[in-house]
Amino acid sequence: MNFSHIQFSIDEGIGLVTIHRPEKLNALNAAVMQDLRTVFEHAGSNSEVKGLILTGSGEKAFVAGADIRELAEIDPPRAEILSSQGQATFRLLETMRKPSVAAINGFALGGGMELAMACTARIASTNAKMGQPEVKLGIVPGYGATQRLPRLVGRGKAIELLISGEMIDAAEAHRIGLVNHVVEGSNLLAFAKDWLKKVLANGPLAVALTIQAVETGYDVGLEAGLRFEAMAFGFSAATEDRREGTRAFLEKRPAVFTGR
Image 1 (cartoon, rainbow, N blue to C red):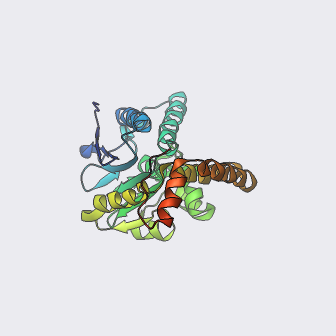
Image 2: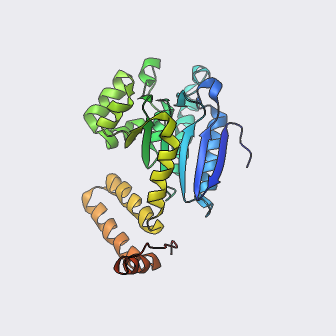
Image 3: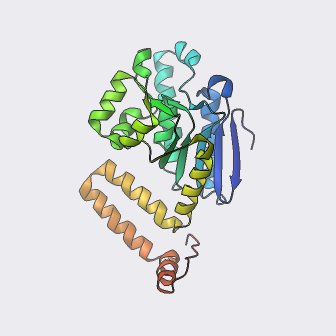
């Protein structure tokens, strides 16, 4: 597949998506967003891809936000369309039923932080800086920050970050639960791959259903979420993976899951 600003490779079932626009700190312009949509659609339907790692090119930035030159020229109708299209692209990642990891290797600002929040987990290098600075430009976050950030860190802290527009470092992001792990930059991708391999060693249907159950509960509330969990538990009990997993445990050997 050919992309203008994305590098994509698959190794041992892990799709590595590198946003490659280093001269602009990997800022999200229209071309990058189209590339992301294409790669998410491809990864979601490609059985060879079991999980994704997203990162940025170079050592300075994961994604340093949107392309300000594009924002400076945008009119209100186009702005709403742009927001809706970006939200839909990030939902492709969030709902593809495959685990994803944001390997945050520097600045993750604005749309970059929103992209990271759409991933299943976030692993940051020690030099990472994160924030939603849109209010400093007189605009509102448009790719999901007002909805995902409160779900990750709680309403109070989310409001503070959203209306102050200030950046936080990796240690603070970890303290408030925005990122799952903080590691040295030289070990970031290796750590992300090892973490994802541990997840992919589990039953793939069970992993997908667990992620879906968590997301469903957030959307519909506790009672409906519990009903979905019971349904997912029943579905998983009917799979070959359940039979293999329980048999392997009793036989004291590693399970070999097939996703069926």
